[in-house]
Structures are given as C-alpha cells and as structure tokens.
Length: 183
Image 1 (cartoon, rainbow, N blue to C red):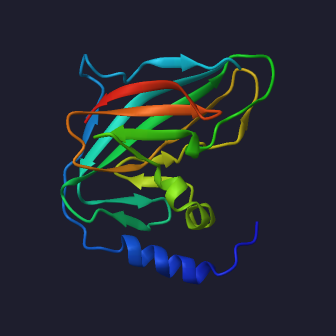
Image 2 (spheres, rainbow, N blue to C red):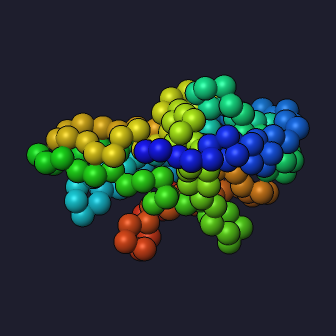
C-alpha cells in the first residue's frame, strides 16, 4: 500500500506525541482475583480470545519496535497494554479481528487502541512494541489456520483510569465480551 504524504503525517504524529516524557513505573498485572486476566472468550466462529497479560504504566512513554516513542502528556495518563492471544479452534482458516474491534472503557469513555488512532503512520512505521513490553502489536496477522494462534499487544492511553477498566471485543457493532482489568 502506497501512503502519500508520509513525511507530513510523520511530522504531525511526532508533533502530537512528541511531548516531554514523564517518568513512570510499570507493573505487570494478573494476580488480582477480581481481574479477568487469564479469562477466555470464544466467538460463534470458534475463535478463542484470551487476555493473558496486562502491563500498566502511569505516565512516561512507550517505545515502538523501530525506536519511535509515544509519550503521555501527563502523569495522570496511564498506558494500559493488554496482551491478547487469538486461537483458531476449528479446521478452517479464520480471519482475526482488527485492533479497531477492541476498545477500553474507563470512566464512561471508550478509548481506541493506538494502532487505530495512528493507523496510517503506524502501519507504515512499525507493527511491534519494544518498551515497556516486547512483541507484535495486535493483530500480528489477519488470518490464522486451524489450531494456530495470533498474539500481540494493544496500547491504550487512559486519563485517570481508576481501579479497573473494561476491555471490550466488538464484532458487528455488538459487544461480544468484556474483560475487567485492574490497573
């Protein structure tokens, strides 16, 4: 796919996210009994989704696989980075939903993942993350064969997230499942 005006989009992107980084610490979640980390949901097409890890980081920045940083504007903003595994439990090839099929609810507002917010430039720049976690962004592939898996990280920024957030899977404009995640 040819993207025109890439340097202009890159400058706009860097202008938007090129704010001063504020140091923050990160924490790997999943040991909280009220957390849905480890919970799975299987769609009607028999594609199983599991949130198997959750990284949170108040303020600071994340680094994409090519070294580009996405900075938060304030320490009141938290990066919420769930790791998803999609498993094809059928004997047929299945399509994996795009990142736009997921949203994070916090304080009554829905947040889209960064891959959606910056799709035009992120798809042409990099499709992985290297800090504070390492691996592909979700989805790592658009289709998976029988008994195969696709895994990756979703990156959200949440202003003042509170104690929990809800990760939603939406298919055909309907919420199929949501995971309650402790931040």
